[in-house]
Length: 222
Image 1 (tube, rainbow, N blue to C red):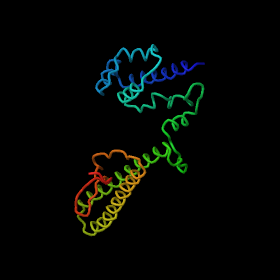
Image 2: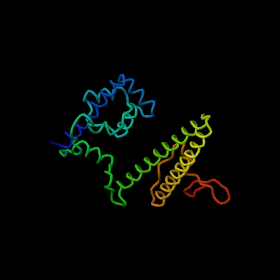
Image 3: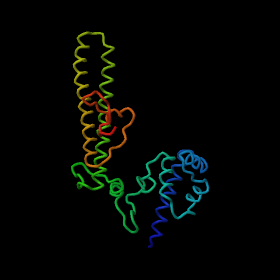
Image 4: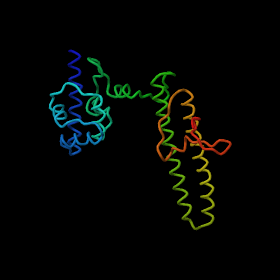
């Protein structure tokens, strides 16, 4: 077995996956080519056809990203047989159980098994924790807003009073979540890790108000 044999097998998996999802999406080869072009990177219909027909022995990294985006799937699905095989040949002649292959590719860390400090795995672990924090904050905000709307529709004074007390606790809960996320982002920056750009609905998390009432980014830049 040679290095080229492995490359051909890997490309074959990419081809099979592209064909399967292209057909599931009801796209022709030209339709997929048009979708790639719309994303800003042209992959001609002939290149897609040659890939699916086994006339290509390799795929460019840029093509993997654009094809995955055009097909609406994670790029890892093009590279590993997720859900279709129990193992994956991650390098020539070396296979791993499929979850181990996925975990290696994504630097997955099991709960209670934190990665070594200063490693790339640790950075990815911290970014996952950041994403989980944002998700929890969003849920807390949504629940508090829903409760607020429900309270505004109540006509019984006693019930409104009870809900008002609960609303105050929920709002405090949201404020604490905001502080936790802001502190976490600040700690990441102190360690030299740039946190992800915030979505528009949460971009206020990186804004602070100084003693003069001026609003500026939480990282201290102006």
